[in-house]
Amino acid sequence: MTIPKIPYRFSTLATALLTVALTACGSDSDNGGGASSQSSQSSENASSSSTSASSQTSASSEASTSSEASSSSSASSEGPISIEPDFQLSLLADFPVGVAVSAASEPYTIFGNNAQPRRDVIVEHFSQLTAGNIMKMSYLHPEEDRYTFDDADELVNFAQTNGMSVHGHALVWHPDYQVPNFMNGYEGDWEAMLTDHVTTIVNHFGDTVVSWDVVNEAVDTYSSNPSDGWRHSVFYNYEPPAEGEVPPYIEVAFQAAHDAKPELDLYYNDYDNTANADRLAKTLEIADHLDDKGIIDGVGFQMHVYMGYPSLDAFRNAFQEVVDRGLKVKVTELDVAVVNPYGGGEPPPQPDYDMELATAQKVRFCEIAEVYLETVPAELRGGFTVWGLTDDESWLMNQFENATGAEYDDVWPLLFNADLSAKPALQGVADAFNGEPCSAE
Ligand code: 9MR
Image 1 (cartoon, helix red, strand yellow):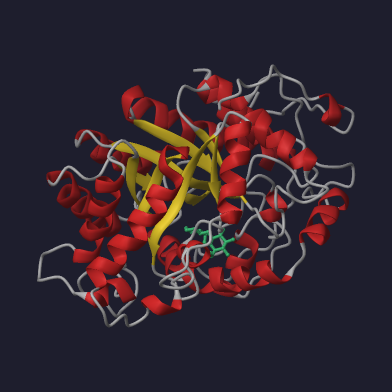
Image 2 (cartoon, rainbow, N blue to C red):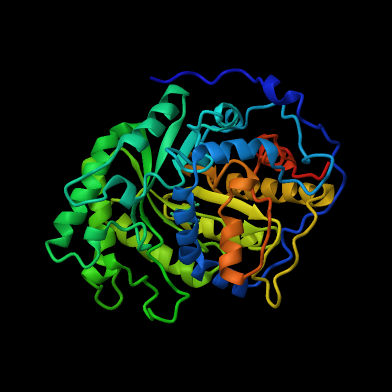
């Protein structure tokens, strides 16, 4: 059942919001950051995620939801820098506008007793949900003969009830804490096993999940281990590819998903495939191989990016490569950290998230969305998704600390403050969706 989106209302939050007049400030977007920053970011991706994954399961949802109310992501003692939007973001776009959410008993779960305000904001501004965690392999398929769908079903039902779709993430992903134990060193018929995994999950959700990251992060051009540019994961090791070939497990997974539900949109998803030429080339190698077989619909660009890096031209170029192939482009995990700890040398100190920075970030979000709209024709727009709702729930603070040792209380990468008020960045995305110039005004 699809319930139409409700008209704009924000009264529950209105009194808490401080409407601000944005001061003029230029954009950092094209100042560059350097490939090395992206390299370090990416090679650390999996290890830090491990930490956050385990910490997530140990905290209670009640603790997290109550802390939401008391913590503020703004450096200002006068409260967070916020706007009072007179729009619903998703109604400004004719493609999915998504947000990654926590569910079940995770911190920041949208199902906590105190999470109604969080749910309200999500329903207000987004038309698609991605499960940040609970639809990964080990959650859905912990043992070879056992699938656990209850938590994901709750999320999918919530989305449906509120007129939102769900993007599935992710059918095949390598980190060892996400891979079900039985898949490690699997000694049986791995093709049949992986086909069963994909088929069972895709069939379970049917059309309630409209698109999938079928394979996530199969490329590894950073670690010194693989010289072929492929991640030597448990899946790769089932059957390493012949030289110059794409690892066979990727095609097996896509073929199974396609055979199960040919009408769904099937994506290959990866990070650092905008500015990093090697990673983009490998991504396109996968896309071309699957496209020749007619079993891929698009490429997902995670886009964990910074204020000044990558450049807008890098985004444009990467999107264009996919568009030129007639495939869809989906921004799957966007966040824009206001500090880049990988820029070389000592990680910079935590900045003051002041009006100038909030405004620059507004422009940056706007420009990214604008490039998406300018480069990707309407029929190839798979969607535009941010990786979390509020700044305080972002994975990045853990990531940066684990990767560099630098501690940041906040890096302000998302569209909403910890108290659920909207940031100027939300206005930036809205400006782009409305076809208005990206402006600091
Ligand atoms: O944000 C997610 C974090 O909460 C989890 O602990 C982690 C491990 O499951 O995964 C994070 O999400 C990752 C996504 O699934 C794939 N791209 C990179 C994301 C950030 O690490």
